[in-house]
Image: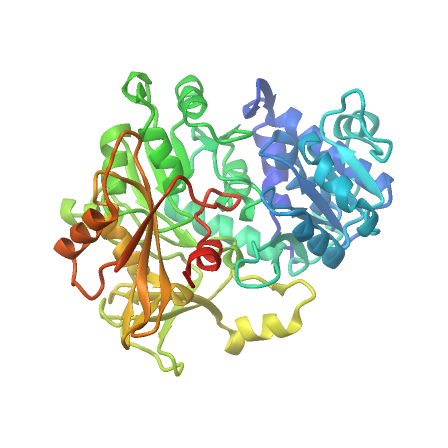
Length: 525
């Protein structure tokens, strides 16, 4: 008998082995794995009871919460599909996504009642609107609450152990891209994708039962870098944060003795800027992974000094579950090689991941650390495809390789160096200029908190680099001073020709700066 590869096997393992171990902490609530798993079983049975069938989508619109963590298992146990929605999207985006994916049920936080109310008549597929926490004064179209469904359902499994009502290549989760380059696309991740991604990540990161990990990256963002699966598989503790706040995050890290966290660069900046940062006891923190966007040069070193831990990068995308690269950090490595892997590269491909580096004509480039081309990926965690978009799927997975759109270099041993996104390269006077390279230089300026570089239309050069920056509080610097700083630290033709100082950046659901919005606003100015 061949047993399907599925994250439900991780769930069943935790249910049996870690029954009495505390597994989830969320907004003052604490659950053992036994309690957590019983809630998952009950919700699974409740979903079946209201008619959710194999292959149907179950949508969720809300913040990080123990209920979302439960839904990573409840629908897929019986072959349905989890579909977490990006809370920062606009009403028109929700309307498009829901009408394409046609979920029967939508779980939502009360904060999103107004936006759903505005489109409710336009999303006929949704038959059940379930509020996460019931309060008085709910709209009449709310059909019930999450807790009522859990309380009213039966315990226990709905099929014999190991006799799963799905195949490993069936879709388990759909995550919609943010639609920065067109309409949002639904990335279909299979049971097999998620299971093997978790195993590969665990083999490189050394996940342990004693781990206490704080979920700062939203779980609607490709399941928070895979954490719901591999941390549960090893019996680690999940600490859920509803909304990122730097002070509350530091308080939780101290209180819960957190030892591992995944962050994006804007979160790092916010935490390090807390005035009394040094008063927090963060001695439990052992590892911080910085991902989601290329971190500024020197950020990993600053994090290590501030937190007293190991800091490194990780690389991936929604279409790959997401991690495809992590640094292998063995304590037996030469100290200089150990530092280089943490700070200067993104790491090597995970087991089960294959890379190609190709030029604009699709010809393979050497892995010499210098040649720059588009990164192509093939492996166990590459998506099944885009939901209901066969043409886009065929284009993106042409030749059996996922075309990432990232411009990279590869060293001989597979160490990845990310140069830029293809769409972010600036072509000025026939020269290719990396926006990422300019940003890395600008982040070295003590006055700059955040920056983004885009190409601005120019009659003479075609494009010129335009730097948009947000300054640190109490700092004053002129655009010309920033330009001169850049010219002193890089080739003049690469330096920004123009600088605009902003009060804040438009950001996506994870806090990532939205360059697509910046291009719309400033490219033609």
